[in-house]
Image 1 (tube, helix red, strand yellow):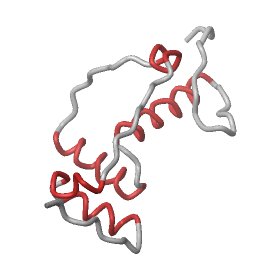
Image 2: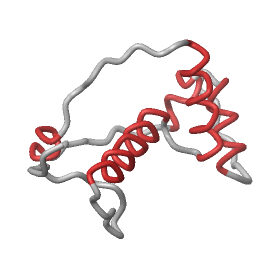
Image 3: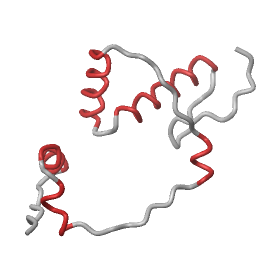
Image 4: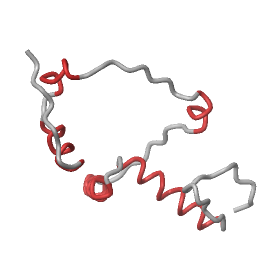
Amino acid sequence: MANKVPDFKSHEEEAEFWATANTLDYIDETEEIDVTLDPALQKKMRPVTIRLRNTQIDALKAIAARKDIPYQTMVRSWITEKLQEELGIKPSRKGPSMKKVTKKV
């Protein structure tokens, strides 16, 4: 028999719980959902591999955890901000985004 998911007082409390809990113990409390990714969004990004020191990755993860965002999302945002700065592009109010750059670097 599966356990009942407890009520949480904060997102931090819930995050701490799920960081150590075995999700299979709570499988009866979950429901299946359908997820469809927008094909246009899929085409706009592609993976990039970079090598970082373990200490750098640990630092990125710690900073991202304080901000409560995935560290890859934070790194992508930082790269976008720096690209905009270097290219003289003003960030939009919707957040950092890069359109096709035609400016010569």
